[in-house]
Length: 639
Image (cartoon, rainbow, N blue to C red):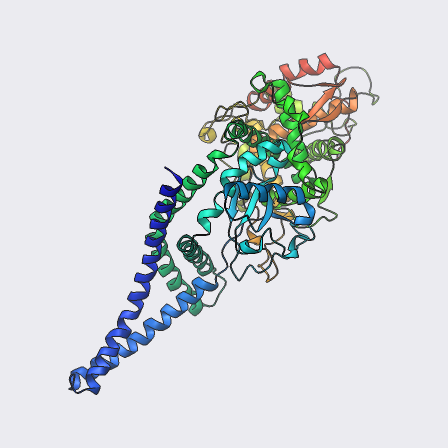
């Protein structure tokens, strides 16, 4: 489809959308037209009699009601604030080279330049219209924007109403300057069709309908107002369904016209750059789920996520032979050099990513502070393992599981000492191993799976956790271009799925493991509920997106109880290794928290822990402990 053909298709579909608006207006005016005819006929003596008088009154009242309702709907559609993507606005003073690149690209494509540039913590780029009066000038917000972004300066005066160019922040750090220009070419080319009056009007109408549906869905109103909002929402949804097909085809026509226009700009380089888009998505998704998410759960947010994705993809190119050659690109100029202060921009996008994907606060505080990559092993990995180990022993105390005896305590010869009266030491790995091994001791009453009874608190706490299995695949493109392909791993931080979907109804191979996992899930649910503040209503100065519905894009479903138990047992093993043989916490860019023994990454711990948790077989893990010289009977330091 050529440029002109795509533009013509888009304009034809835009006119179809506008015709739907005209038909709605005609329907609203129809009772008023009938009332005018009846009133004119009565004044001229043509429609006389009691029947015509009643008809005039009824139709006139109906016309007034319909006109009032139509006016209210039109007002809501025109005034409702359309949704805006959360972004970090970049002022021209903060990135003059980037603005210059976009301006030159628009001149080469012979299209209007975007009015501003913003970054989003995602691997995507698009144009976004922010000309609605409710949005106003882009004022700087410390929550998610760089200071100075609201200066109101644009690239060209003639494009004051042009859309905003939103760029994925990982692109700036991973791509080279030429690759970024090639990727942005079809996006910037979309400003040409966007300037067409019919397409712009159709887009405004569709966005207004969508905003009206969202505004009418608010339940925090009095019953009478809720009824009116329900009517407004019904009308808006009816028109939105009528526009759906035409609006979709219009956007396809705009995209086709923009892609065809961009063919003349760096076509060969754009093919190579598209490969980098898939690779950047794989590395970004891996970095968020494996590295950033554990830190967010600990109340820390990595402040250099974009720099981290470069390290993750460089590590990928070292491990994966299919990614060979990508590291040689690092000698070229990165696109982040187009920014005056890349570190400040990276920090802002990292904080926004934490808000969107985890629901963290908008600003740093005592319980929500940034962490550098150099501090990550000590501030995140070590704390995470020791906190999980402490929680595991608290649950064991609640279940009445006896602590291991102190081997240094004196006792007379003869029979073995009574574990219930013998001196006990602090929390040990041996206590966990003995409890999860069916022959490791006598089951207490609290350990039995039926010990819960009908406790409604436990039922509520575990009701949302069961039956949901974790998926660690990337979701879109794997790191080597194959959908869903996983990078081989086996580090202590792996959140490997335990069991298979649908196995919640099958009897557990290790009843003690199932009981402990359920209690552990209850404890984690209680802690999360206590740490989550109630969602506050949106104020007038909040961003134009639902700030109370964070996280907008959760990275993972809630972990199952058995996954939690696996993570906690792994943490306990790592704590024992650190406190007995001098192992250290580490950071793997692709796999997240990892255990280092003599500076080497441990890669064979996860299957041994799974064998203990699922089957109650501690032999593989005990053999591994003996091999490394880890003493499970020694107490460990908890967090």
